[in-house]
Image (cartoon, rainbow, N blue to C red; front, top):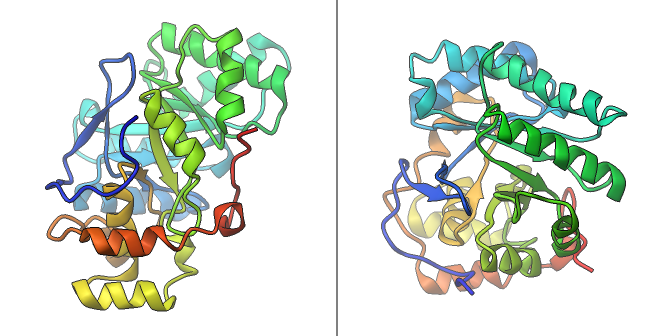
Length: 289
């Protein structure tokens, strides 16, 4: 099993991670657009691209897929150099309608003949039959080259194990879950790493709720960094793929400035000791059993 703690090796904003059983690689840092208003989202994505991000995370639920697509087209970057993720939260009824629903997202982001790099099931909450229906739609999308990889979000061990009964693509390439020092989801994290599943961390800066937490403030002062930068560096050193979200240009840029320092082993241990299990989640802890 791969270690779930601490790496002080040199990291860079350009770092990529390989996805399991795939030639696709995912950037180690992403930019989230959860609740980014449509009139702001494109501008925020363009600031992120200028700051060096090459990975955008959106969803049908966020209502801004089209704006992400506009930002990609207006970025001046080659499409192949950008990694974009979206998600489906519920099926549309029949398998064919569910397929059309995911295809619509691809078209919003990439145009009629475009693609996305990663398509996730946003939540397991729809139930087993609907989880299967969504996964089969994503597998069809993958087979047709409309997405380069597929995965899940908010899935615990039991949900990923359940997929073995019907999935042609297993393990899923990615599992995106809430991760930060207060919610480390150790069982799901270890399981994913054991199977080569890339673990993405949403809410890695805890929506700034912990900005005044004494331990975190002390570490920020020690390293001359913001509390958000400490949390993001922590996520990188845990081998997670953090997805910080902001619509403030200064914060977007600062949240990518993570590569001129490394957290010492004892400071990683201090942050590891803050874990509150499921009680530390601000959004959702996964169900493993």
